[in-house]
Image (cartoon, rainbow, N blue to C red; front, side, top):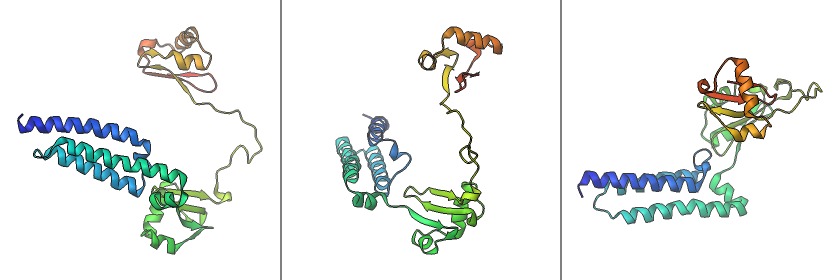
Length: 221
């Protein structure tokens, strides 16, 4: 087999294997990864790249390496579910950056964050004044969670003693000009009702890219 074809086959095979391994590890690998999972991801990628381009190496060695490395986060996850101490060690714990409107300088230094970096994280949360913050914590994932002081929080219906109807998620009933019967039946609507609403809007089903029904039973297209 020519080298270029060997590399092509190896790359295709390892993309499939890495995809299946990532699916097995779950969505957490994509959003909220721990230090251990981050290192594992780098290791798996490095093994894949080495075996894809290392023509003198047996492909089975790379597959075994990836499966072994991928099994570790799974085992660690099982242990973490049963032990908080172990979970804190692997995934880390949140660090308080602001308490009662005061910056915790020691904690900033501990996490190697500068005041400018903290202010930048606050601005991403639409907070421009530290004194407006009651509590802010740097999560183990690197995100900053912010709780404003009561007087700086937006008013809610509860604050005004108002009773409001619950809002349900909108149901997508038309996609790419095709009617989706399952969400339509979920909200107790029929195709006949849908066609009537489309006539009121002056459009035909074929011309609708996306159609949704909100919690009030209104169709938007």
